Length: 300
Image (cartoon, rainbow, N blue to C red):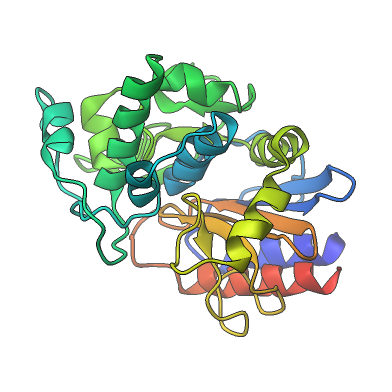
């Protein structure tokens, strides 16, 4: 673990990130180890920072709900896996955003990573289940994962970009999540490293996520499976060299990620605020992602 900590210290000292947290997941024993590092205190290891999870929100809401609630149907699969033909993104109106998202026809299409598709999945599941989506989502999460508007100001948060020239701290980075100020499935969750690790471990323990995903990954035809991203080239992937082809996970815009190898039954999580200043400033982060992944897979 000390080697991981040393690499994390190098990242926060050599990049724009104020902090980085890492977890190593063991699904054979349903255990995890984790730590966090702050640039102002590189010896800090107590997980207390609430990171903007960005698009990790998608698997922690949509994918978890799909599996836990046993949601079936071609339309749901197309939406969840970004193959429904919806636009990738756009600034939504505060008055009729649901009507806009529901207006798009759902048709089998080439893969196009789409926030709108994730939101349409949410709205369709709400109609199907007749339940509030936030309520459904938090059945699978824990107290160290929070909707950004439920942060009470006592949490430690890091800067992610700017709003009107002022540092953005403790406010969701995504424009639509910020403008609409309602629970959404594409972005908006904040969480600690231990909270995200516990969520993944507990979900597998209850719903056999790895066994479920292994079967689907073995026969996959497209990039996304159950809303999770997958590894197309194990020799050149942000998940880190050395994983099997049956590895799944997700990336978050703010500098977050997790990857799980269903064959090795291990995984890793990285949380950071790498986009503190610029969305494109990810050179050091992506090198770190590859390094941590390669180190983790070697432990199997």
